[in-house]
Amino acid sequence: MASFLDFAEIAQALSQTHSRLQIAQTVGDFLAVLDPAETESCARFLIGRSLAQGETAKLNVSGRAVWRTAAEIVGGEDSGEEIFASAVDFGEAIEMLMRLRREQPAPTLTIAGVAQVFGEIAAIEGRSARKRKLDALRDLLAQATALEAKYLAKILIGEMRHGMSEGVMIDALARMAKLTAAEVRRMHMLEGDLGRVAATLRGVRPAKSAGAAAIRPLKPMLAQPAQDVAEAFAIVGREFALEHKLDGARVQIHRVAGETRIFSRRLNEITPSLPEVVEAMERLGDRSAILDGEVIAVNDEGRPLAFQELMRRFRRVREIDRLRAEQPIRLYVFDLIGLDGRLLIDQTYQSRTEALAELAASAGLEMPKRLVTTSLAEAEQFFADAIAAGHEGVMAKALESRYTPGARGRGWLKIKRVQTLDLVIVAADWGYGRRHGWLSNYHLAAREEHSGKLHEVGKTFKGLTDDQFREMTERLLALKTGEHAGTVEVRPEVVVEVAYSDIQRSPQYESAMALRFARIVRVREDKAPGEADTIEAMAREFERQTLKPRSRTDNL
Ligand code: AMP
Image (cartoon, rainbow, N blue to C red; front, side, top):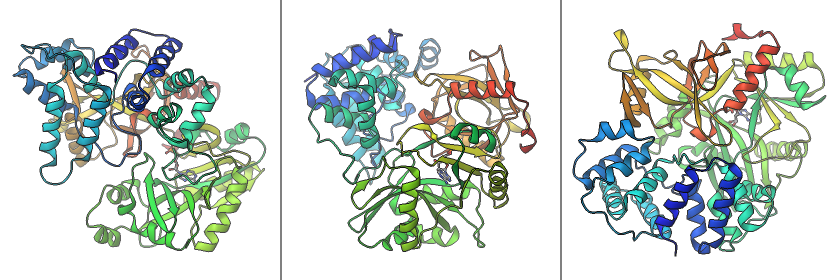
């Protein structure tokens, strides 16, 4: 069995390598000689995941808890500020802190052992769960050397900073298994977790075939933004389908052998929160299906309500009946991923939609309004109708496109009323005057596609209500990693949707771009930082904006 120190040393070496190819080679070779049973956890750890993607149980260990626990082991938190100021990241701060221990333990941890403890911590629930989780964390950290503690901390907060994105891991696994990256990517689409892919490739798990019904959730297919309907025509081609874009939350519903399970966009199971959806699925009887759809909050007249109203339902696991009466929801299904035990991801949008329409009609399920057209005038009218009906915009879908789990292709384009980007909050300034005592000016960052590195692209203090400022302050303080000159740095965990007027050149930021008139539209509880918009997408947007005069700034 491999020691956890081996893992830490490999990770350390990666942080000094800049070439994507070399990183993939080093990792592929390391994984190839590892005990097959350990490849699953090791692959996951290397991309900063403690557990499998889609796992319902969570560790619920914050960075603050890791810091406090390490400080307790060392015996004193006094040097905290100093350490944070000189460390490059949270993991290094933990390493520096742990080096202050009088006696360093000999390395005894193994990769499998660490994976087991993570599983145990996640499984702790019920009375005094928090305390028991922290006790288990303390036991683990106490056995770790300073370098091991650095990497335990990095995995726990999901921030490796060694250039190992999911894309690079796919290349590494391809090298390990002597397959092409495309073959591994396809397995990833089906498995939804790179750890499971690694284990399957090493023969520890059976492969999932595209012919079999998925029991695990698949990553949802993603959409790429388009400026307007005319641009969508230009990208997709002459004919496409337009659908109302509903402003709610994505759901993936698995109905297998009379049982229903519902997963969120982030593949968390949310079945207990949505009894209405479970009831609707009963109407499918014995048929099995995997449906993709959106749940929206509606008022008494059935008109869509703001996304925030819906989030109240999603976070709840108790008092469902009361909330159900208070806040009605409505399910719309827009894709059919599997039917009667077969995955349909290789069929065209057109044929999936035909099958869906039949199934939906037989079970009384609603689909979003839809139009297939070649006429720009008709398409623009459809967009205007969608907005008038209270929706967010439209989706344009290529008739021939396949369902590509987890991928943002040209098959689906989203056209929204206002120009927005989903960005990550990386720091916040303390407010003054009326905002005294709140973290109220947020530093926003976009993600670099391959490395996952975050680049600041703007700041905003607009868009939140006083209550939301208060809530956000609390939330960010729990993610604090350092502070100087009135600015609190935080772990990048909160994703916000930001509306803006345009993108301008800016010498102030490394990215050389900044958003003008940025304003937070909402907090994207459903998005992880890894799903935030990329700096590359922003650069494309910038280019587009400079090529063509903007006509939609009045929509802000
Ligand atoms: P965004 O979340 O802004 O990246 O836009 C894509 C999201 O729009 C999807 O993940 C769905 O949750 C949502 N959506 C709403 N209506 C539709 C639709 N008709 N087809 C596909 N996605 C939709």
